[in-house]
Image (cartoon, rainbow, N blue to C red; front, side, top):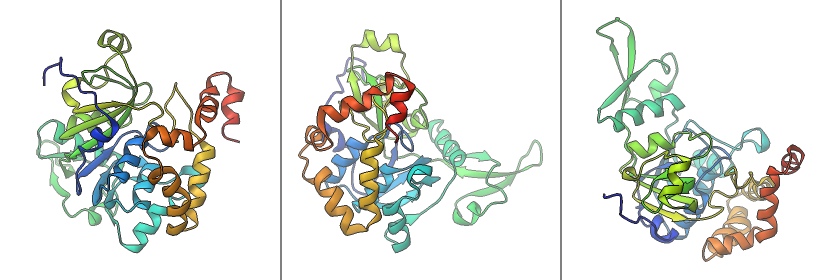
Length: 306
């Protein structure tokens, strides 16, 4: 694509790039910069049978499992960390067998994405030797290094059909800027067949160059400006993690599938026509302003987690 191409679209048009059965890489991680608005829209659009790949994730994977959108989960971790604990929807789906689990580790994912981005069929690694990952993944092979004689594990290339990211800034051409840790987003962008991104703010190309290009336009298929598109996860410097909303989500999920459908999916996904409705449902400008107060002082930041 030519750099002059304008890749801006609506959130619904953005999510239309995801097809049933796609292998999907979700950007961000844990409670940081996850593309939750895009995932809610994918649920509304009825996308299902997804294979999710990633490293350490939380509410994003749990939400999709709770909505019945997931067929396979190939993650290194899914949970709510020490704050809340295990991921209820994810756990139920795993125990019921409705989601096939292909546990992996972070570095395995890195090497598989590197192989895909470099046009290689596999990549060598050492770190899973001596673990049961070899039993979980019969597709992993071993070889003796022709230079050292060391035993190595070979992991196949991984090319997701779609990578879904949420970033702080983009220009209209699709150049993306990520503030803070990129997690696996850069590798996802290089390895995936398509890259779609929600953005806190779309700015001019000249402004974006001043921030710095994290992911260049030629990797990116489409972008949509979606302020607070990572909520309830954090997207610094704009807003902190919404612990209050996450607690409400967690209690609904913990009480069972029916409770989650009635108490969370209904009011915050299905009854929200779009992202604007969702922001109103979570408390509107007052709540969003509260999440931005983390910048005022360390004390204000800590109050958000009480």
